[in-house]
Image (cartoon, rainbow over all chains, first blue to last red; front, top):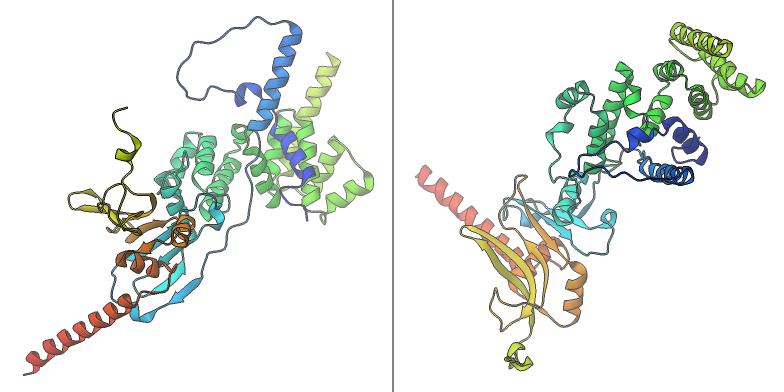
Length: 293
Length: 127
């Protein structure tokens, strides 16, 4: 079964993300500097655009998509006679600089005398206290609670929320996964796919939607913006992930490409057939008028 | 030069390396640093190396935070450092060393004292 990290899957997702240089290098809030103007020849301009595309590729590396982590539940020692001496628990962290954070020893001695390994939340907090990382707070901000996420989504700031989430949580923590899924659901509900189009979160969103077979809205959006290549790569990805569905078998038998592939997919798999047919018709009329004129 | 090397480097007669707590912080707010130092030095004076810290006041989540640099601890113990009694008790609680016998004895004494108080409490209530 294909995973998120396979070469083929990654190439498809990267093609769909698109590279809109104006959006990737949109001004991030930094200290103000007056704009710099350079006089270049055609060749130098092409060279500069090529370098910009390479830097954009680096900025568009997709954050990892992992399963939720198992809760830690390991008791190292039980000393029942210590019960009643202490009123609070002790948390001991190993501060050796060279151990990776995943393998660090963080143990908790409870007031009832049992010595256990710390839970994931305690681990994250302790590691942030002793080895602070930029952009991460010790206690997660109240923004990531469900009632406050609604406010953020009304202001169309999904990308900022996702960037903050990546800085604050580990990729396999349940909070990270919950915030990401909420964001993707909201975008799918209001069809705001363009907000994430040239960012590094687009691949993750497409992976989420294809795994849950909710690709109709995205397909309509792509056809409306005349992005037929992206639509075909979306459907190829769908076939890679769900090879047992009928359109996948037909596509493999007939080796269909382009608009035919979309039509076969629409007939068998989608829920909103009517909308997609309308969009396809509008696209074909647009193509016909442009080739005629 | 005004001060030659011999004025800056203190020489001791006897003395050994200990791993102990150095108290810091402010009024009504203690904070201990777990420190490897010569035994003749002042408690909060110049130390050889800081090996961790302990915050004796519980935080928002009701826990007392302690950090221990185990790799450097092992180095100093290998060099022949001695431990102060509170440091031994803390490392026993952490699980790095076996539990200190005084911790066990203290728990036993506390339990016996509480039992005696309870008996004294129930006896006058009866009689």
